[in-house]
Image (tube, rainbow, N blue to C red):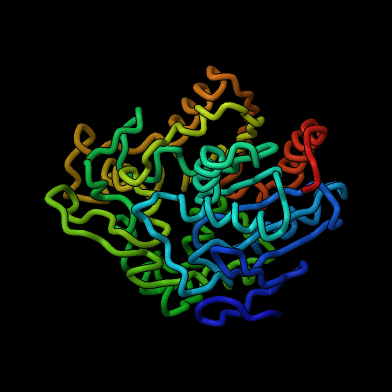
Length: 365
């Protein structure tokens, strides 16, 4: 075991784990495959770390060099490196480019999950020449997470009800106390087993994944981040720090910027049919919870509708195709938010075929 993270949480690793210092960030990076292989970079989601990708990395065809960093604010990243949420996900995007520079990787295949998918929409817009192909697994909508209408317009200009403003305080309390019990509906273990993967599935490495959850950097400038008082429901808006605030809809300056890049890499979108996190009725979106009756003060669908996250992504990819790009889309049945963990055989068939189809355009750095 190696000790990484702001709280020195033990994160078990199956792969070569190195501490890499780029021009922007010092963080833990996992590697597998031949050093001269075709590079593929994995970008993890919220409340996790690069560890979640280890088995997926090990199952790749041996022509690939897999690279998976812990993002700023997560796992083994420098705890002093904060996320400037006023830039949306640009801090993460720039960090990835700096890591590639440090590793002498000119371009790579990229795979993102959840928050990591949101990061890669931005990365594709910022650094299109560095993306050989893009695989998105249950990605955040290009319009961010929470508080937006079907066309991506934020319900409120200040993003009230999204970002840190939408995070359950009981969950944060239990996260910070490293609660491993199932006593509360909001315990980290129950959240994973109820919402992240589809019950009754539980991964064999649940304990390891829990370690990455507790390695989340926490606080008003990390997770969940700060909030700002708002005249709009529910009375608070996302603040200026932290990854959750970086996903707020009012922080996405150009959500469809990736559709306007001159050279468009192929995009693979994989989604679990029963995903409760990234969904048109997400259980982590206040609009959805209000519509279900869990929030009595909810102002109604005309004011704060559920965010149609999957529909937004589908429409964005339609536009990507209309502007010259190509996409491949798969929905995996009986699967939640983590297709590569819950349905590894089905996922690998899709991913490996896609990568091998487009490997001819790759250069190993």
